[in-house]
Length: 255
Image (cartoon, rainbow, N blue to C red; front, side, top):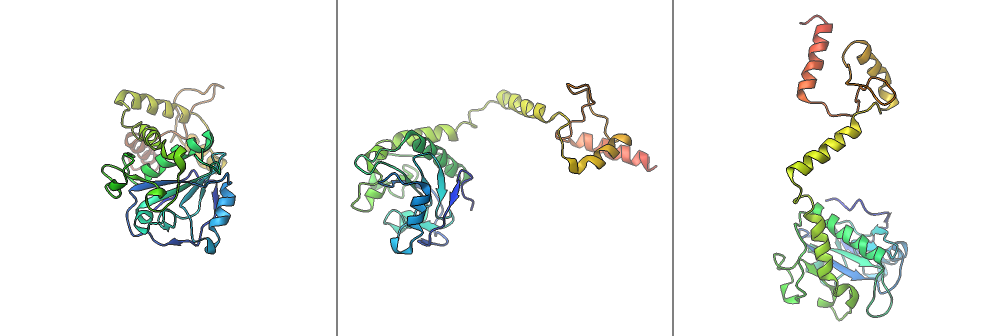
């Protein structure tokens, strides 16, 4: 099970169970009830005496940290069943009600939630604000700490934005689904154009020169500086591959 590539800081907490005993199908968003940096929050969770942790933390500056691997259960929502199925996220906030968060933290939270969903096969986030739907992930797969303990977490600011969070995450998740074949072909062609030049590493210089000198590679057209364009980074089709094999066979007298 992978972790998010969005993280910029890691401080693995001892407060966890490894591995988690359930498949990830839920996200639980918390507030730190303070404007902690991801390093400060991680330092707190690194203390075994705290008896608490989360999978991720998001700072007011939008930086993201990992405290418990996604494959492991954090100690975050005062409920082992929820923590075993949920990825938990602590977000830096004001220290007083309604525990507001910065725009940078909020935007990073959206990106992180979308990333978690994509990597764990969660097709969409669902929120009805109904604690009776805990575990009924076909209708609601977001949970909050206040449903499991006498706490204000995640604060009214984030709690009241859960519907917006779900909508923004789902917009990101369905982006590729809405792409037409025509749009995909256009993007693919643009990607190919970026590869069709002579950019390459020095490690292959001798081999490339040999291929040119021995007629293995002819290139196609010219670059802007008038040099033959060998398109070293471009894709190789099977058709092109067999032509290379054929040229080599000609060179060694097999055909």
